[in-house]
Length: 352
Image 1 (cartoon, one colour):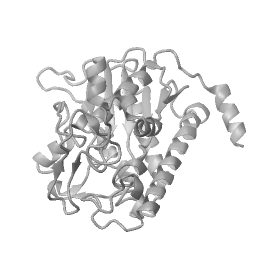
Image 2 (cartoon, one colour):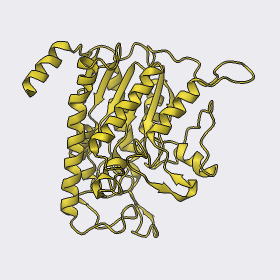
Image 3 (tube, helix red, strand yellow):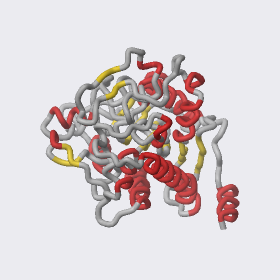
Image 4 (cartoon, helix red, strand yellow):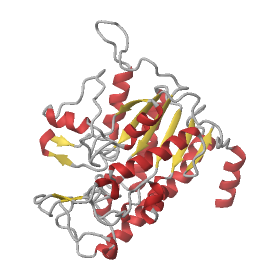
């Protein structure tokens, strides 16, 4: 059966390797969590839990979970594409699957369901003075790429890893949520999509093996169980499972189910990119001596006594226990540019 599926997909697919993935790359619209967010969660916190109003382009920021410039801002800087960042730190795909409360905003972290709805509100925004949309002034189906990178909080502590999902939901429900969001973006003009698969979280200090920098406890997980080898192995299993589903489901939805007529998808294998970076960091731009198993910035399990390394951030793969550093984000961005060009070895391309 697996061979038959592969053969059918191979016969149906138009793979765009060697040609531009998108005709004109003028806009990048991003959805996700703290790996992508620049300032959206900060807006919620600074406005008593209120969301940014439709029509507001949030400012560029280096006050991020990774300690500097996010990967999507790097992409914008490299290509000149205008960035519309809807990601929210702490987000999951749906709060109906995973619910994580944040006291400063008096509710759960806004999820990707909110993010896509915010995007739709923005494209429908009409400025009362100009009677035009002053936010999206140059959005066409042929010049805009939509990226989705979500899963770190869905799969981790307080979520599937700790059996904390709601309503008897499972990992397939989280995957369904992602494609449901693509439905909404597609219905509102999206035609070029980059699905970024889950990072190798088992290599992070939060979920790592004990002989590879894995922490016994963290302010992200103060009461972490002592069986950290089992935790790391389970996380590896979860990320590998989800990425395998992405690998097969994306061409199925596009080419067999005909769910997105006229659309193009790239599945960006960030998992492999970051794994390669972990084992050969200087080849991806980290400064020698490169440090991949301990974070640049670390607090004690209570969240106090936080300290930064005396060595500069460009030496580090991880900013803290969970978040890639600015230097790692730059490596992700450089390869994202190749993905959009249509010639990345870390991407699989599908066109209906």
